Length: 243
Ligand code: C5P
Image (cartoon, rainbow, N blue to C red; front, side, top):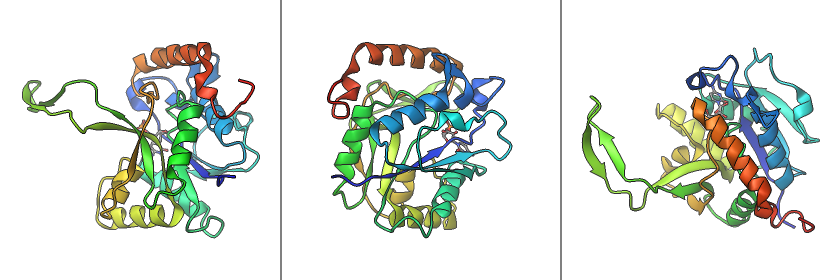
């Protein structure tokens, strides 16, 4: 039987780019908050996992009824995403073992499929570094000149979008985030902190519809993605033998 991972879900963002009346993880998607969808997907893939959910200390929208996991804890969010993740790792120090696998998944990605979650987990089982779901860049990439014009076309060969989850062993992830902080590095995902240690995380090709709800139009897109996935239940493959 494969190892049960720890799950860290940073959900303490304010989501200001959405311009909504509440943080984006509480906006309604098919009648339920984004956060409930995301946790349900993670639970389908890893029902026995232990969850650390990072929430703003002033969060007034959260309802524990949305958490399907039996073993979970609420952890205070930090100023930046990396601070929220660091708080979660500190909260399980002493309980988590150095070699335990920790999967970090943004609450703003409710469309991640069970199939991708299970494939990532399997791909990382014996990996000495860890890795992340990622999608190859499909569009031609432009760099701007800072004044709204193109200064260069960047070759897209070998370029990937970093998605989540990202999974690393507890000890390595703690060390990577600690050293990144000490060096003053800007860390927008776990992999970049591990890269700064000189390690090369594994890229696990994931679905392009694992989008991050960031801008107002993303909510409608996510609803379409969920409806399309429901009509084609392949994302349950490997989990529900009757599905
Ligand atoms: O804002 P953005 O979409 O980049 O945030 C990525 C993830 O990090 C979201 O799930 C958000 O809730 C979380 N976050 C957090 N603590 C912060 C900022 C963001 O947990 N201080």
